[in-house]
Length: 164
Image (cartoon, rainbow, N blue to C red; front, side):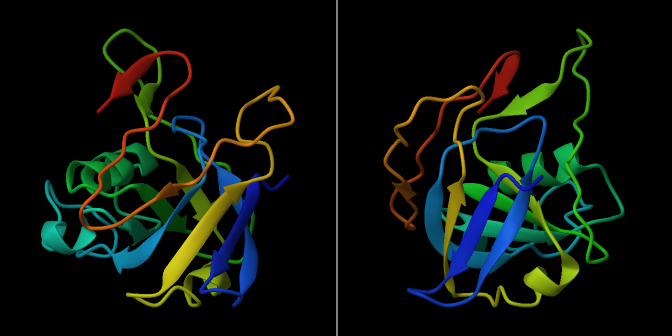
């Protein structure tokens, strides 16, 4: 099922997201920046400076979920939202590292339906909240990380290799 919800603006649209197998699970808040190119299929984002300190949004397709997330993270994104190509739930699989384990990212990487992606205009503020931030997690949520162009926080990962 869903892993959490995204709220747009102070009290705007609210829609579910699905988790990735390879990312951090901390809640984040920040401004939306759509990746250029929108599928993040090139070696580096054309608008890396615009993505830094923000929640990057990319479309599904043209490369792996992990490659998209790594490129957004390299540009300084504090979270990544992958927009599915249809209105269907999708848990994001990951790529293997040289040792056969999953490549891990500290920042949260999630997936939303195509129709939800249409409700994420560049420059809008979003709040990404996990229903349970840690697997088998306790009853307390960690405080959210607030994204701004001046703070590039690094969150904790789970097992395996952590890519910073």
